[in-house]
Length: 489
Image (cartoon, rainbow, N blue to C red):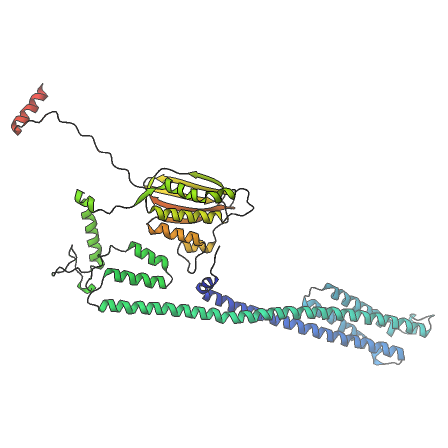
């Protein structure tokens, strides 16, 4: 499969530029979100340090033994509320690290227990029977555990912050890449539109020159239209116009359209050919076709009729199979042919070259490890129409190629062999189509190329003539008399 990426991008530059702009908006929103998350994590670290400083103040006041405000119920309650707020902030961040959340909950619980020990009074029975030194030593151990837990939480938050910064940096790189590509797409679209405008302007200029000229030919008009349509990327439309255009006036010079006449021979009083247009042209065409259909087919007309080339379809298929048979058998492809000995119109060399390209592409399209490679050639005759089907069980046609084969896409074609085959077939007025084939379940089973040809009509059998026994010279009156006598007898 060969794809010209440059042509593909150029044909879709406007769509890609629009997608790029929307992507920049989405990436900008993502960068803002990561920046906000990073700021919240940093604020959480600072807030957690503030909360722990309050715990340290309470611990110091207990060691000194003074009746400081750090041991008051309101101060302790605010400290515990500080840890609760830190937990809510982390939950709102929706970070993936659940260990940090568990450590925060455990730290909040341990701080609450520590405050109960630090603010308890002797009459509450919490220190009965324990010397002051033992109590302070126990509290010191608890405070050290709180410090260790706080450090673990800080490390987890630092890891989350680094991960957010890494994702933000990667998204920022994507942003700059897209921001650099979008102007390129916009530029390609601008140059494409400028090129189309130049083609239209050039076509309009040439058309005005033809209209102002004293004489021009139908061939010149046709070539101008085909060139303009092809330059705009409408190659199939140009081809359709070229095929369906009226018969040329043998390249003779013709007058301006405003001098058009409807005389059957398309000539003015001086005997000079003129161009017939509009409704008059349609009437004249219908009249010519009717006259030709009603006119007797004399031997002179038969001699002037152009003979279309024809060839044996079965013979051509055999010739091509002989050329590719070595590839078919060496790759283990099961070949099935069902042909008929039918004569069709067309160029034999062009058809064989097209069929060779079709079969070569089919042979190269199979999956290497497929043990059931299958290739079939089938010929069906329906009246004067001959359908030649080539089916292979290889990989399916891409949507882009099918669009190009139908003339719905521009740019470099995929499957060069198939494009060549299509051009060769259409050059001698035959038709070719491509499609993917699926089974009843919708699963892809292969692909098919179908060529529609016209069979050469069989010669009409002549009606046998009766041989005359003898010829007599007589009058009409005598002949009628003999006939009556024969009836009476």
